[in-house]
Length: 477
Image (tube, rainbow, N blue to C red; front, side, top):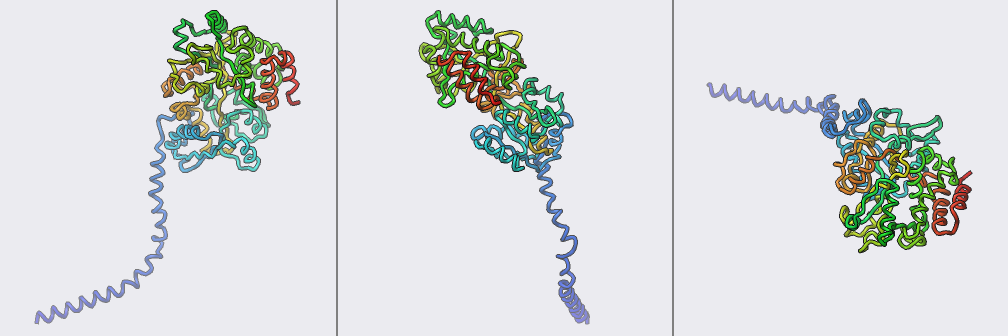
């Protein structure tokens, strides 16, 4: 009896289970279209949000203006955005630039997209006119920047970077050089980031020390050293200004360096702008100061004629003969790329700062550097521009070599190459800076009559007064 009851109950249970199973599809079908399923995608975006936060950890090693856009970027406010940068740099300099940006990208989550190449200067005007300017651009010559400033195309960085921060990070000369006149008056057109150093004199250190010569601290001491070397039977100076179609440019660097040492910054700026004529007493005095070195009998290896005929890259070769054919060579830091491959810095060669002439003008340094400007006013671009005011942004060059930080927070320890750390010390001790003047002059002058005139004067094809008058006449009216 009990067995029959249990069998009957079992049949009812099985039947109930079958009915339940059959009923399930009817109740489950709407599930896929239910609102919770439709709202699942936001839940799926949670992991990327966590990843984005992880990609923007901030950094206590990066410190910009208090309350500024860089500080906001370090708080991840602009994470996930992109800043486009254009410029002339290609390998290896583009890699060095990117290495300097890496800390900014890692700390802020902002991507810096570099799109530059050697055609930059030809492309940039077209891009700006078409309304397709990059967010930020790296200009190796500020003269081109001035054109865009007059057109009102450049963002005034002083509208967001406080003046007290800029004066903390830069010698006033860098700020002066970045100040240009726009449609509404002067603006801070950008920030200088890195530079080369031109005011250097190279010498064969081992032979120099063995001869008992001393590094001069003044112009008079430099002339006395030259006289001593000549008295010892050698030519003190290695000078060459030949450079094919650009012959004469090394001579313009000499003029610029001497101008900075014999007259005021105001006169230098007026000369570059064309309001102080080449025929003025100030410019003529600078040229005559150069002539006292170049044209003095026995001062230049190969004599006066060699100045014009010697390729500038070959002119320092006399430093490395045994014994040296010449002992002193004034040229920018890049000249070491023309030195013998087996020459050791600090042993076979070294340098000293081209000494002051008139003490009232301090210790000026002639430079050629890169300036960042902003075309598109975006918060992430503002953050990057503030980052460029830090020496850390130049770290790729300081590690691998090739350029020097202009910011005042740069320290010798940042430089991996001892020779470049020593050059950086010249920057640190400078009282003022000015950009290569011929690069800022109109092309007809700076890369035309100025080059030609200095060459004609050095070769004897024309006297100084004639050369200076001809350069003035070539200035665009």
